Length: 476
Image (cartoon, rainbow, N blue to C red; front, side, top):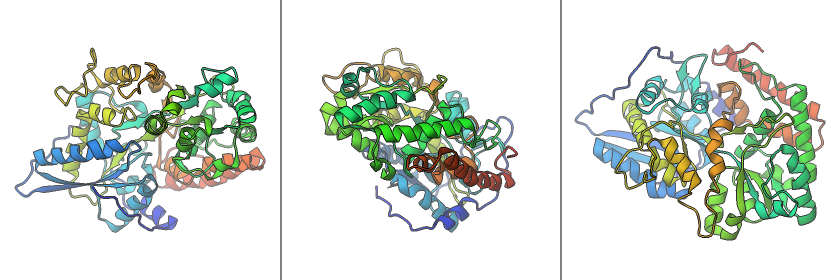
């Protein structure tokens, strides 16, 4: 499987491509997806896939998984892997050209491409018929409630806990790690002052900074929008959250967080230069392979509580396959998506538990190379929780149950548009890093109320633009 080169595309081109095409009408009623019979001619399926943070997922499993399925179904399958940073530009370029891959996988909600992709209501409904209800955060990250259109098919998501170095927090009297955001200042600040090790929360234009900004705002009972998709960013609670981030930077971080990339907090934790990060278990998995002694010291906590005890985590990654309007192989693509869900125990295992299923009630397949060998596990939820209780990738000497805290992640994880859906407007706000920029401005010295007001001036026109297209609700 080859790596794709990066395509040059301007931001103007990107936004033009994102808005191209017409809105497909949402299907109504119980629609059952039935793939068409293959013709005598051999079919093709082209998949554009992000390069997974856990390399074995691609090299040891997904590529061969697709080839075996293709061989059984008379389909020539091509899988191209590209980096996270290239997905947006590549998608826009292919849509603008009207030619490219049949399936494109995103790891944030691709709602801004709704006018240019097929409505996947049929395959989503068929998946729920076969495998049970989809997790609500996955549905809110793939369906537009205004148009009733599924702009993507969400097969899984990634939990975003807090990762902390237990030995460092033990030295300041908090061995169980932080529980509240304020603990990051009280104890995290002490660790920085006394031990010279900072916190690893990004304030830059990258994925993890986006997630951290949202988790903080939600803990203060605020966010970009309300449940009806009205913009609410400019309020006293947001200003208080931004003030907190400015204090946190001053007490417990260094200026390097302004230039962090998507892997910077992972690297800092593994190198022993961070006491706490907001990330998935991928950093821990990397440490197991690269610096086992650090890995043994890494433990996990749920989202941190805000001033009133509220806590929410933004799912670290939300997987969504889109089928562009130009695809001539949509029926084949949909058939493959259902096959993927049918075998999601393999996706979970080969991602080293990085992937969590969108369909927790899917029955566990039998006889599939021994992936589902946990006693008493009948559906993916059982398997998911059993593996978190007894990590099959636990290193020698590590305690059993280190990942057990993640079993409750369904209760405290939500989508990037919380409390509303992940709309095209939310997608554009996410893609243009309005929230981490707002936090960074205050951390650099801008008055918090001004930083929030500037964010509002950027967000409101984005919402109004998509509202005029009929793709976003609300009135303000």
